[in-house]
Image (cartoon, rainbow, N blue to C red; front, side):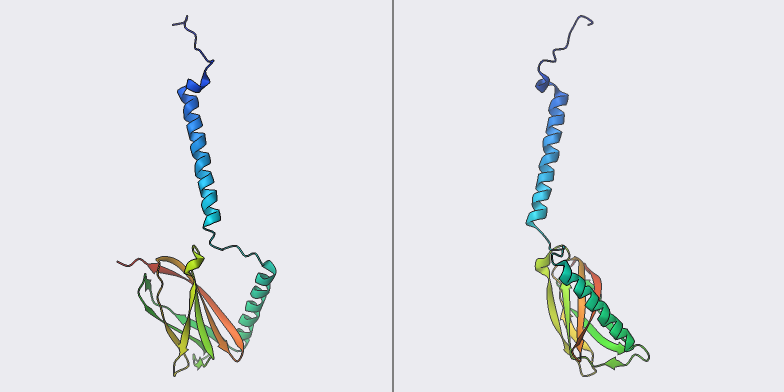
Length: 170
């Protein structure tokens, strides 16, 4: 056994070298696939117009301060949601002290799917005789959704954001 010499002149026939090369090609292929999927299925989560986004945040904060200075608050009632099943939604502006409803002009509920912007949409809520707003919300996919309520009163728009989880239909 001590007289035998290994022939290292052909490393491509060594099973360890072949194994490492296969693993390297596999890892690079998976990474290229993931980069391609990230480019092709861009969910639009990155803001490209940062000046506009900053101005929007400042405006939202100003309106929130205005809402608080008037002693008002926004209320949004959404029950537990199930995939593809309609659910009633209620929204209102109310006075913090006493809870009386302040009659708004209009209300819209925007819904966003963080993983797929093609599922985004909105529903216009109808004003009820008591000053609240009501509508029906039906979300097509299970998982996490973000909703933004916008209520307009005397030319000012007030917003309330929330995250929801939609259960799978059984």
